[in-house]
Length: 271
Image 1 (cartoon, helix red, strand yellow):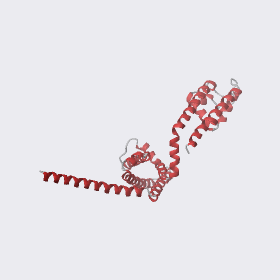
Image 2 (cartoon, rainbow, N blue to C red):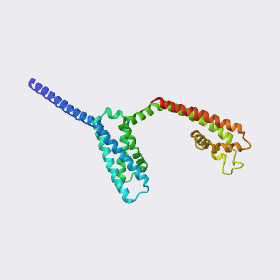
Image 3 (cartoon, rainbow, N blue to C red):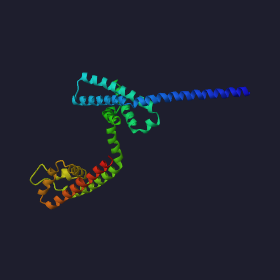
Image 4 (cartoon, rainbow, N blue to C red):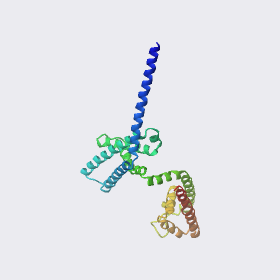
């Protein structure tokens, strides 16, 4: 019996040695793949293909509507790009599996975009899936993958990501102030009706409801044609020119000159 026990022990040690050797060989292969994938040459090639795919999308939208021949060529090119990006994702996943790949949110972004692209190939083959036309719009987002290849662009995206919590607080304050002024705008200007001298100006169109007033004030915040909205209000007999001026001047100072600049300052703080 002791001979059987010794043989079993030696056999277990041999199996464990074979498993360790296999694991070591697999880790060596992954290390080589990881080193190859991280090289500048590999990253430049992938970035160049992403850029080519983006240029193709631009050309197709510029030629819209495209002829049948051009559409067939575009389908072939899209299939080629999709196959290339699929193999690139498999290469990346194999080289960085499992935790390094899973922890990088850009990799999950790649998975979603490529999954949509692969689903688009089914549409090219004749099998139409519901809602796929809308999902195909995500293919244009492939250019965002370029940010993961260029360190300078990735720094900008990382800074934006770090600034999101503080910017959300500032945006919330902007929205609250915008809502307060929208309520007052509806109360002050929403029921004025048609302009006494300009029949094309109707105050209800700009300030009749909360949503329309909020959109108008957002337009004023951006500085887009705000005088065309504000100046006609001075000529309504029921309004005080001083009151109209104070309302919009205070709004522009508080929102456009102060709060929006706070948002920009919070963003710049992360760079």
